[in-house]
Image (cartoon, rainbow, N blue to C red; front, side, top):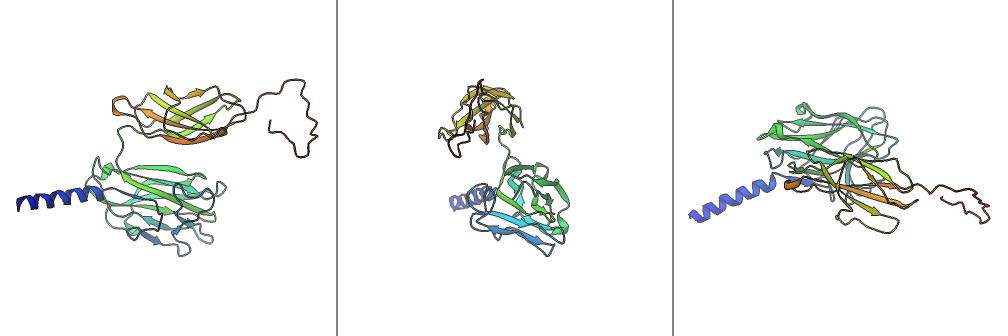
Amino acid sequence: MKKITFLFIVMIAFCWRSNAQFTESFETEIPATWTILDLSSTNSWVWDDTPEGDGAQDGSAIARIESGYDNPNDDYLVTPQITVTSGLNDRITFYVKSRSGTFLEPYEVLLSTTAATAADFTVVLQEESNAPGEWTKVTLDLSAYDSQSVYVAIRSTSQDEWELYVDNFVNDTFPACMEPTDLIVENISNATVDFAWTENGTATSWNIEIVDITAGETVTGTPTVSGATNPYTITGLTSNNEYEIYVQADCGTEGPSIWVGPIAFTTACDAFTAPYIQDFDNAGDIPDC
């Protein structure tokens, strides 16, 4: 009997820890465990397995809402209840984008410590801002709510724009080695590019993988450059060539972060040397370089 009781307790503890985290990529639906609050009476959050623009962040489906026309949106997409436990599920991440970079969708992220009703979302986790025109990861810290049960809501406030997309929610904990964010490339020449990023932890060394898209290469997870500094100038590139680059923080004894990227760019053409002659004798033959 004691063995059975002990096993039962272990199973309860295992299930609780397993269910304390969640992921949701909306591949088949917006689950019934999520709550949709439609206060604008015009549009509402819906499931979409054929999103326009750049498609889903991962897989094929997303949750989205169309912008209000006569009145602004006031619509909440609410997570299941999260019982926050330090070191287990004290952060939430998701990806967000506007359907078009021309029509940016305002939204905010709110938190409730009581119930999944609009009046209870009194904590602002992220102030109203415009979702970018490309998929962007949002990371929110829930550690202040350790041992509390909370709900997190994405509230669309858009009017006369287009559509707001969200995808790939993850409720987990912060890794020992935080991944870099805000990757940028600058000063692109025919053979070099300056690559930079934001460090979110204490790393002072990073790994970089350079993928030659024109040559048909794909990402491998193996560094092209180890021990890079931030920023870093990549050299030895081919002119008029497409590349993607990834970066990973190296936290020493704590191990590396996950790889982040890609960020894509095309190198410039080689400079023309005099004399340069182009007679365009071949129809439609306007050279790239």
